[in-house]
Length: 559
Image (cartoon, rainbow, N blue to C red; front, top):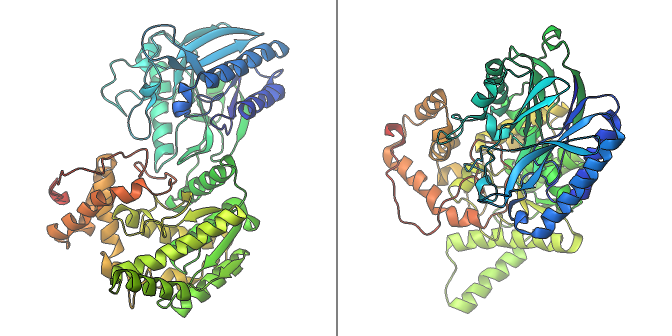
């Protein structure tokens, strides 16, 4: 049997565009292959959320399915396509399903049995779990189907009452096919390969794993589709973070040479995730260009460099906005950075407007604004200028706050938090530096000036201000917020490494920083979406109340 893995970049709600991608693969492989496999919810895009509550959405999707079914009469191959199906029984109105079309007919249908409701997933909001087995007879071969979470029983959620893999393992299969919308995060690729290798061995059958690729809001799907032999060895692997298609002949798969699985350094993986996520967010939201406030600091520098890598220099604009506390180096470094990136950089002083803001405050309220108020005034003037530029020229504003600072609210609402997307919101501060070095190594030149990388981080909103004097040294700050946010997802060695970093930090100081994470929830709720790269990111994957009074004692090393 000749099977094609069609790794496509689908867009939620772009039914004509998704249809075109599927039809293009059918036209390319339809007379060569026996089976063309697409990813989970390929027709609707993953994940439609409450678009599923609109009857017109389902009607439009079903019209696409009818067209695709009819077009299979023109090719010899069958297709496997993920889509929403209507549930005729009790429960939620829909299934997360796959359809197999051949010769103009629907020849098989399977509904996903395990519906994830953790982290970024909330499929039980709209879908009912399927009950029927995913077993199909094709060309004399017994084919078993899984849809993404079906393969992760007891790994991601121990509350599942059935195991679709165990059910398939009893069926003496010739082939397992898993269609997926599996997002990328640290170590996910290695975990995915290892886990499905065990599944192919349990079923004693080759396994075809087709994953979606592309960015959708804050989530990035990495692709990396693969084929395993019955021994769990990879014999074909598609590249990550790009669309790709390949045909694999399964007739003698055990004799095929094994294939090396892609490996990435931590910085390289983040680069791939962030550039793809940014590129697709801009494109799928209908923007052409972006604008970034260039402060001369590491966060804005890395954001600008990533934007250029993702979109090209013609699509990126920088604006540096000095005031009385800005060092001359910050302006110079911003101009050097933008020149090295080949992008324009507007230099606009905010000093006059800052002075007027202070005077207006005194005249209105009869006293001098506090130091913190003056700091926020500067940030909000800068944020206003960026939004004015966006309004007039149509650029998307990218905010630049990193995960360490967003965790504890070290940012100004309606100021530096302004924007339509935060590129670094799931990147800890030390990782920002690693990205800066990676970006320079990648192009073999100092695109990000070394002066930006090596100077002490500062918001430069007051005289002599440095970030670490206001917070903690960043290695310790990163360790605390990582343990607060992600500890239950971390390995024992990762936890130990962070606890070792905190050996000299008092419990009182740990508690102070940890409390700030909860206290800043109201800020993050008003922040732009962020691109997810870690196992748990702020946003849809971490939902806490704003108004709450639970105060845990954050003795992290004893928890």
